[in-house]
Length: 239
Image (cartoon, rainbow, N blue to C red; front, side, top):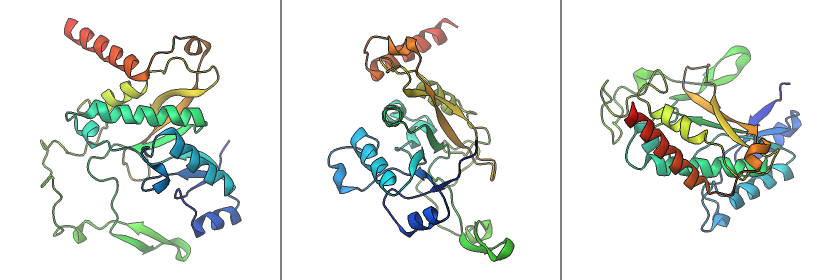
């Protein structure tokens, strides 16, 4: 069944009211970055996510998707520290599972997410849409990463797992958490892409935990993933 949703920022704006007037009941949310109530918690920790979910619900929306992410540039580029970044992703996914948020939308573009040079391009029926004109960017200052060449470590990939980094990421987040209550949506797989502009915007979709997962001993996610990494390393060495 198709469900109509709107991307809504984590704090109420006039768009919230407009979406409700248009009959939208589902929210694609962000993460509560910069919320002073987070105190020492990260935006992907349980309490900030629970508070954000409650605000969406108070506005009449079910939080169906989170389309934001912890820092991931090291994971995307295969740099030291990538597994620590993936650990924060797993924390996010586990907390989403506890809160019943079934879909996480992420992107696999290093350094930038997406760029537009205009937000008022005339379109059908007088609608205004976003657009990108490369000619307007040719003299723009470079980022800290300089000119991107074919062998540059932040070269944007046409295929998400071309250098193996996305494959590593996908394998890591697909490790099922142990000790999960049966019926809890906490097992995640990678799927999909953003077809509109061929950008690798991917989604992680929640699966329902099985009885086997529910009966597993209460081992930490970090310990489980470390063991899986060791096993993979041994397998690669054996080959």
